[in-house]
Image (cartoon, rainbow, N blue to C red; front, side, top):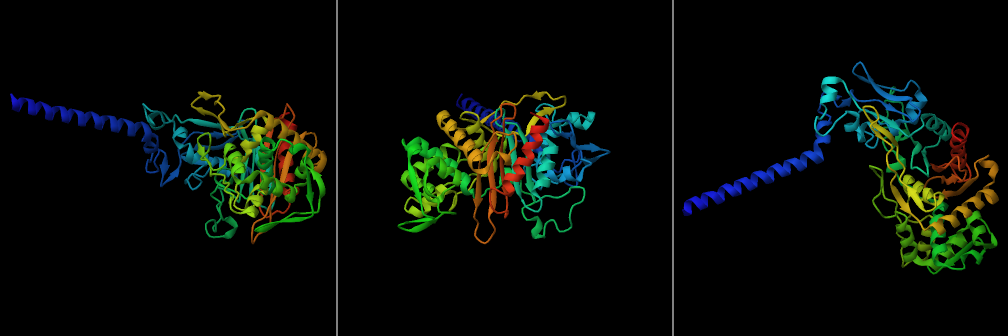
Length: 455
């Protein structure tokens, strides 16, 4: 009897182990099967590690950006479009890890949980992806950058649709440069700077400092600040671009006065500034839908008054990710809700996955959003001039990000307040000088295209 019981226990243990193994394999399959099925060793999809068989990638207007013909991946006929859309479409070798070819390769292969890639292997049935991107807007943005590198992204702040996204440097996948991996000209070429880059923000960070001030200093709107071109703290000096004299909070914002905003940052202190920044997504792991973003960073040294002041101005160790900060602009424009910019419109054999639900990346107090919207509108109207943005009813802020050993980066963020053109934009033009120059010009060129064809 004892032997029988002992044997029964062993059998139970073996059964339990078997069931655990089945559950483990099931979980592994559910989590990793898409990756296994679309591994570069799979010759049904790849030839010597290069994707050759997959569905079409189309822009929002139906223009084919990539497709398979005669066992080979074929891209747009236009060299300008190929360069402008490189980082969104991606390459077939997977060097651009956030490109659609690489990041959504299981969807492009037509993979599903039950049949794997059977439809592709036996029926030639791939899955197509339609992007929210307008390839013509990308081409205009690319050409507007001229000699400068950098990035621009444009998003519909009411829906989260990412309608334009360009990163430079870039190259033509149909004419790959011989020195692509060795020339300084192509440094960072495989990086989509919109999602995987971070920049010193310069004065656009004053938007976050202003949000903190609006929520923590009751009389900030009626305050006056004195700017003599610089002011000293116990451990450093804050330098301004001009001597602005006695100015109000709005005037300080319009003039991008470092002295005023340095004083405001010091009054708020590192703890409150960090709290506001983190509430708006800084120091957090965020994603644009499925695509992970590099963290925006805000870590002022509480022990250093000069560092706290410079951090609130947008220098020091403050860094922003473009897509994240674009969502902050979405929140201001959209009454407090900042949708996550989404590049995908539809996926599936016949567009089965239609109407992706917008996801919120950033939340803001609606009252704060409304006040910031007014401040940004006043900045364009009273400082930069509406003639820089004809017919856009633009709200915005420029930035000049100073980087040691390099020329300043030109920065612009903003959005159209027209009901029929709900678009927000962020642009970084590297080593291009003042924010009121290249970044503003590039942003306007793209938005004028959308105004002409979409409004």
